[in-house]
Length: 160
Length: 189
Image (cartoon, rainbow over all chains, first blue to last red; front, side, top):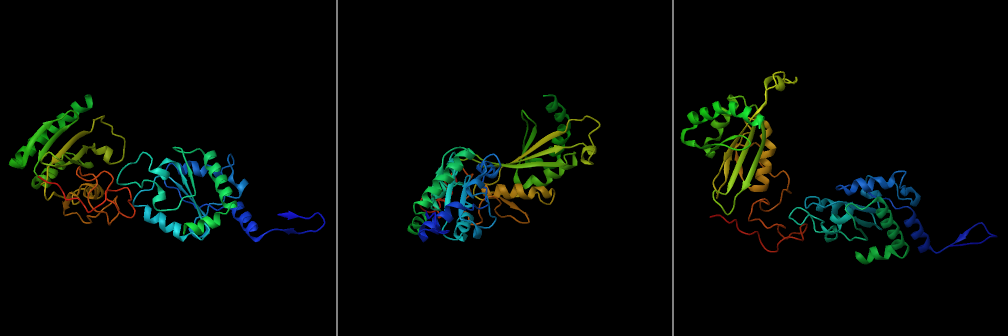
């Protein structure tokens, strides 16, 4: 963006402007799967306060969200539902895999739990931890903002 | 241990009645470490349950199942009962200080076609535990009003807590870590 001291307007490229809008207002979906969700909920509390980054509005509908935080182990029974919710989110959309279980199945090596949510969804950022601290999730959010600023929309299209 | 001893006095009469009522259907009466128990054949379950209830055991605590594979008989269904004092049932604090007695029934259904009678007619709370046993072990409950899966998805193949079921399940769209190939045949001696 360029701002001229003499003239009351800003010049920018449309792409830049879109990325700025996308990074500055990430709306996560209200969805908690397991114990990681407890840590996820606290990121909107005054102590961590993701409203500093415009990401505090947890929407209760996938149609109004552009970020899915997979906060816990994904049971086989939940997997089709999760995929449907993801498909219902409008493009562009991003996914954070929060914690060991969402990223790899964690301690659950059995018939009931997916060995990582990336087997059914494209994941943008993985957060290690069991559970990750809210700081770690905010760091993931920062990483996601960097990804979007670097052309996240193109990635989304490339991922199909 | 005092609690166990107090419970034994209450179950002595029950064991005597079971021996009289069931005859050959009563396979064994054991005084286990935690409570008295009776091993019965599946056909004798409902008469046994009636005798249990008539002896003051008014609460069905839980229904459990065990797969002893490769031993045979392979499946075991266990029922735990509690004799809650009448004033506790009525909702007040038990005044007598009586320790509630406990009792267990064990049934070994057939290996190839495991069926036991449903207790839903006697205890409505048998509904969900029986569905859970059916879901995870494939033991059917004859007379259950709504015997379908309760924990696993409706289209799930196989019974996951059987010993011959693969630990990671079968490879499907939403179970990519599972074993590839068709459903393995049920191993039964």
